[in-house]
Length: 66
Image (cartoon, rainbow, N blue to C red; front, side, top):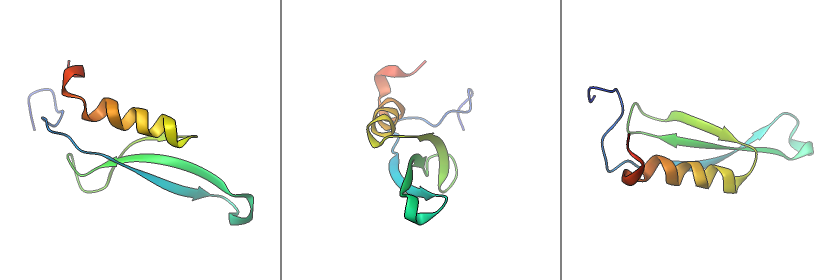
């Protein structure tokens, strides 16, 4: 790991749709996951796919590095 414990670039993430609760209620959450830190690391969870895609973009964008 780098000094600030963040993986270097390029970073990759994926959005995974997850069913929560009773399957008949169709309650979905969208997780952003990566293998950059450890295999299948959960980065964040979102109520909509668009929010998850936005978070994925922010994670992968090297111009946003601190």
